[in-house]
Amino acid sequence: MIVEERTYTVKPGTVLQYYKDYDPRGLEIQKRVLGNLIGYFHTEIGQLNKIVHLWGYDSLAEREKRRTALSTDPDWIAYLMQSPDIIVEMESRILIPAPFSPIR
Image 1 (spheres, rainbow, N blue to C red):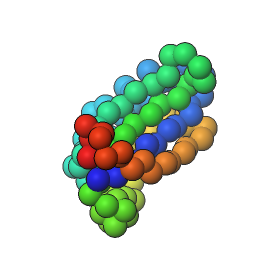
Image 2 (image 1 turned 120 degrees about the vertical axis):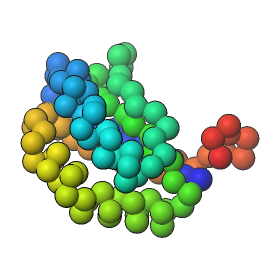
Image 3 (image 1 turned 120 degrees about the horizontal axis):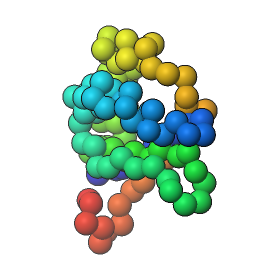
Image 4 (image 1 turned 30 degrees about the vertical axis):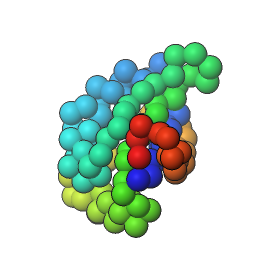
């Protein structure tokens, strides 16, 4: 298994606005297409205005297939067109679980 960590930096004071827009519209689409949502978080201490979500995949190939499917999904495209313009920056990292990790 691999874990994709996606971090969005949003405009100050808009974390709750992001959540209200994303759930249930965007969340349901991503869960349907991407599958394994591990967790969704935001920062409270340190660098603020960060939203972090973790998605699990069996492999990089599966991730690529699912991300491609998401980018062409008509419901996802419509969601993006109607969402508020509050994301300032997006980052993505691939995490590989250690042999002793409870998530493997």
